[in-house]
Length: 303
Image (cartoon, rainbow, N blue to C red; front, side, top):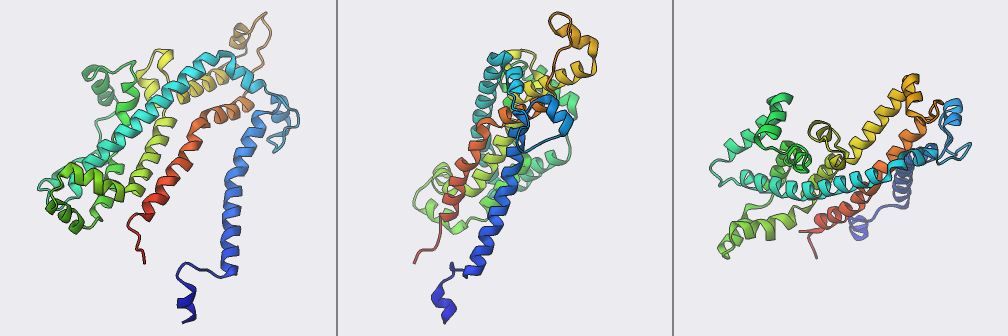
């Protein structure tokens, strides 16, 4: 009787203390590497090479950021391209994946097995890089356009199967009752299925956002115009240029003014690029966290 009076959500003080200590330690493990990256990015390159990474700069320097922002307009342009591609790709992609997953999750859809096999087959086999490239360049003609950065990752087969599994767990009686009340398929989907599937949709949207934000390969393949490259590809290209100049003294002298050896921050600029690249994506986690909690509360039993 004592356990029943305490309630299902109550925990003992010892258990609560252990949980708090565990999550405090986990949060610390996540924060410490970020703090180290910030510290190294604000350190002098020579001190980092001589003494390694430190949690506090031995010699404070902003040269890594000054080096990167010598072409600030290009960084801002790539930032804008990446944000547009991420937002548009995530919204349209999640909508298409949900619309594909919902019918194949319905037992009354006669061709559900065929379409399920089709999406699953693409996870196991593909036509190769050359044919994949020719489809987008020759057939669709999206080279040097933002569509080249959006279309290749618009629909993920694995994400479709995740949504299909979640949609299939929804009670069919609920959908049937909506049909009896006169609701059409689109109204059932957007007014009933989507609100009940917020946790799954938010999870897919989060991973889709990360995929678009971290993508650099599509820019490498399809984009030759520097005004349309993504931020991650710009950082990747900058790092390759630094590595080349560092290993090639003659090229470094040619790139410098007056024939002197160009001072290139290798380690510190790598960390500075991590800070610049992480950008607004850090705000995606608390944004989606809202919908995780909201989705978990949908359909909760109330006394």
